[in-house]
Image (tube, rainbow, N blue to C red):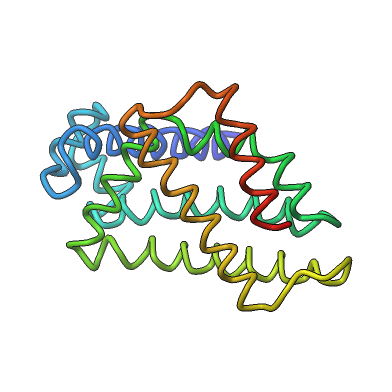
Length: 197
């Protein structure tokens, strides 16, 4: 029983540290954020912080793992569906809630900026992006079983455009430059439907 309590505490403290690190990265940038900054924001001692995360790079990789988990949940949903386009429509409100969150968007823009200069930041996120792109391409390419859908190359290009749309929405959300959701959601869905028509 005590072990379960310790595991819950460990999980909660890791989440608090990651939340503090995200806030620091948004406010100061990844490069300018120190482990001491993360300690102060997370209200944790340096010794305790290093027990959870031995370096700033390990924190970055944990943030990347969280994004990988979010991607995997969407992939599982689409893979289980007979019609992945309809399944994407079902998931769209939750997906937009996630990517259009202002703090999330600001963090993703900061990560993208830092990744352009720092291979250690680029590598984990690039691997996640590539896996997500491959999984989406495979799922939508398999749709040809239910009707003509074009070539594998065409599907890969459609997925590229879909992910570019998502990246653009994230960048706009980071700058609070979006129309109201009641206008945006149907426009995004219409664009996706036309893309995979």
